[in-house]
Amino acid sequence: MAQQALPARDARLGKPLGASGDEGARAALRSGAGRSGRSVSGVALLLPDGSPDGTGRPSPLSALAVRPLAGRLARAGRAEGLTAHVVRYRHRGWNGGAADPARDAAWAVAEVVRRYGDVPVCLVGAGMGARAALHAAGHPAVGAVLGLAPWFPEPDADGGSADAADGTGPEGAEASEAEAPGDGPARRAADPVKQLVGRHVLLVHGTNDRRTDPELSYRYAERAKKINRDTCRFEVHSDGHALLQHRSEVHALAVDFLLGALFAQDFARPVQDAMAAPPPLGLRMPLAAGFGASLRR
Image 1: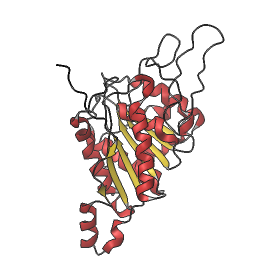
Image 2: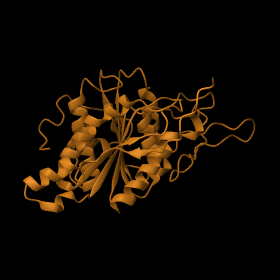
Image 3: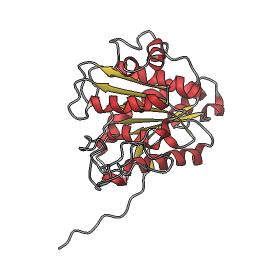
Image 4: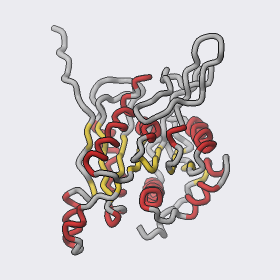
């Protein structure tokens, strides 16, 4: 007997953490902020990791992996009215030119605007989710993108992406400047960067990542930096794909970046230096052990 197909699924936002969540409301009442503590002034959308291919249901473990960071960001930004959501994808894979998680990310930004109005959004992605965040950054509500161990496919022989993406991306993303030569088959377009103009962009990658190539994220950051000076990249020496060895430093860096990008707080000095430095210095900035220990957040 043939297996019956599962019903179609829609992308959705996970339970809110922070200003609009029950936990945030109770904290606001205890502090005397009253109902105004429920006001949302900014949103962090967490985009989980995934697989290059697959139309099955996403693994719940991927969403669980980014939930601690979502909670950390929500707690750090509660006074500013930050809410965090973990995005639940329709499918587990990127799926070539379909770029399914990037389209889900674009939907999630539009849904945030529908729910909360004109508030700034930071897209925070891990692995495949980082690539989705970068693709979906063209929406006017997006003010910042944070990519942790971003996944990019190996380039093909012509220098483009190996997953046959057409460079158009989801709604809000523009095509890459990489076009096909005059003769022969069309070259696969590289991942777009034009949609990052006007956004703060931070990429973080472990130097011992065996799952996603740190050099590919450096090359992407190098292209992005040429058109957007507010781009930087940190390297976490000796850490792997999940960035577990230096998790506290990575989370502190994420908090500092988000509060600075969305709420105009001062960036920590290493982030300021990385933004200001030209390549390769600003794109290979080492994340120092103990980063964030002295920050009052």
